[in-house]
Length: 421
Image (tube, rainbow, N blue to C red; front, side, top):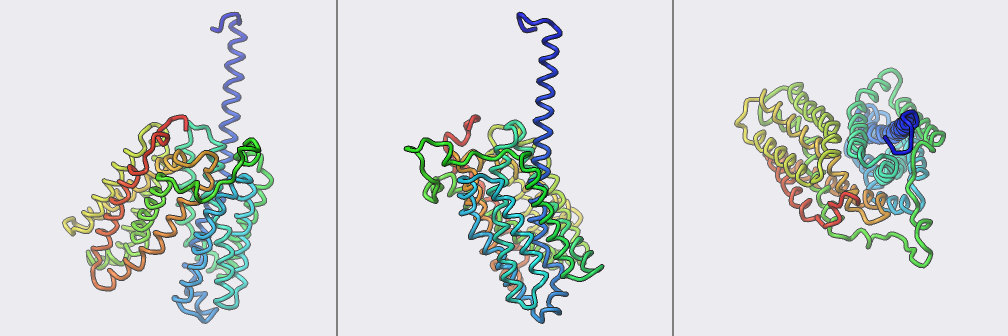
């Protein structure tokens, strides 16, 4: 009991504290719901068109190569703009940037439904990609400002899970809508959902604690803008490369696993798809559990080393052909679980490594590494498949995963593991 206070007064103080904590957690749940909805839609939009390719090819009189170029325009504009958007987030705050980006992303998807030529489709997808560039810089900055440090790992895990869910349901939603109506109406509907989500973010914007803009928090004589030079630190460069190699591993596994499983193990299409599905589902489970791990450990680099080591070993076993196929499914699922488990710990490491006041630009810069990895790796994997070396898919993905491990340790600086950073 506090000296000088009666038992009833102490109980009243305890109740007041519990109410304040509950109110804070309630706001955090609203924050996660609002930001997670936008992240879910951003991932759904990235896979909105591929399930519709057969219909779009007939309607626009084009081929898969042309549609591949149009989809590439989406990724290019996202990759080019992510770092500049991160600087903008650090300068003016994340809420306005997130709302504007979600709105532009959704409008681009709606506009794509009006396309009458391949060039129009590519142009509208480039617009949508520009909107897509805001999510990682703005989301991570806003989550860092809005969520209590003791729960930030779980917040990052739920954020990652929302994106994974967007990927998972995109084919089902798009094919379902196109079956009932057509591919244009399907794009109109999912784009309208994004516009509605942007409006909801505007209405509920006070639920999200924004970051403090740099130019208003520093004395005028010490004020300076964050530039690319500020991000050229050892941790940031190492994490950029880390993300690039992980994206290189993941892009090959997501794109070519089904074809490789059929070639290596002589299984049918449904069995090969089941293998990839198990990998993706267990990655989602790993992301969810990884948030609890990230909130309970201090050395997140050791978590990454152990999990990626196990994932790489699983991929080697798949490539070795030593296992019967029923064990291959479980082994590949374990690789997916381990890759997902470390996502929250990985994001916390990046957050700690970010220069002061530059969380948005740091995540914008780092996630550009994903774009680089997704650009350089698929042609290499495709060439390996073309020359009849499907097992090399898993050997190379394993190698990329192992290369990523020392990059995390090379990024270490004393401040990176400061609990108060």
